[in-house]
Length: 164
Image 1 (cartoon, helix red, strand yellow):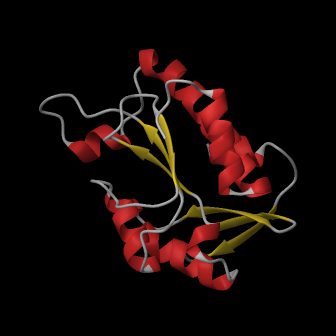
Image 2 (spheres, rainbow, N blue to C red; image 1 turned 180 degrees about the horizontal axis):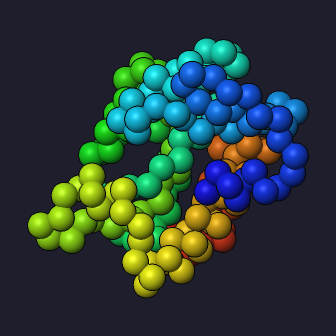
């Protein structure tokens, strides 16, 4: 999904031990370079470096707790079973962090969760995930340009049947 946003214009790129930061004016994107389960370290360092409060961040992540292709946008809440989001919330010290989740569905019976999450999607899943990532990128772009309320408005108008 990050690549979809990066394709929308020139971005200045900076490297840090904890992540890659892409900047266009006052708009920032972060690609953490930590392990996913330690993503909070990168998000906290990014937030501190650029003086961004948690409410101005949008954490985007895949989620096995959502059906394949489902997209959810929330202003805050708990981490669910996502260890990376648990790390982010712990590092920021609040659950009031906007998040955008893209469902990848649960692992097949008997398959290890880490193996499932790190494996490529099946050919049947690629189309569904592509559409979901396109929509998530559009929501993230609106969030960056106009804030959470504008993204939530687009979310509720554009994709009937998608959960909020």
